[in-house]
Amino acid sequence: MKIIKMPKLPIWECAECTWSVELEYPPVKCPRCKKPWQTFSGKLKKTGEKKWKCMVCGYIHTGEAPPATCPKCRASYEEFTEIK
Ligand SMILES: [Zn+2]
Ligand SMILES: [Zn+2]
Image 1 (spheres, rainbow, N blue to C red):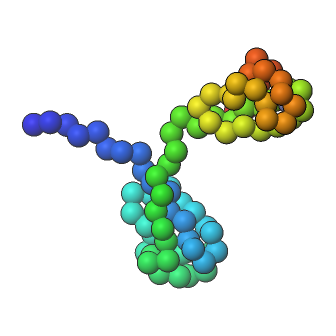
Image 2 (cartoon, helix red, strand yellow):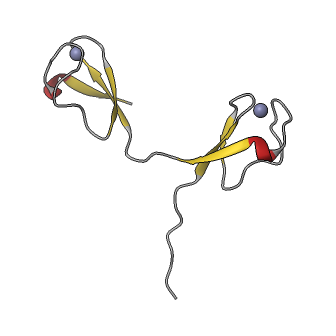
């Protein structure tokens, strides 16, 4: 038997109040606005997303790697530091 790797758990977000939770299934109802689970929309958690900060101008880039050049101040990717 093949072992199928489970995908990353999705994030469920309430369309009413934007409350979100990381679960395999949406909650029965929103704990915040009491809307039923149908209000929730699931989205897959993005993987490999990191935040990079330009040390020159403070621009924040989100992605797997820093941009080649900062779109704001044209600094090279070497000026970017990962924010954790
Ligand atoms: Zn809600
Ligand atoms: Zn910059």
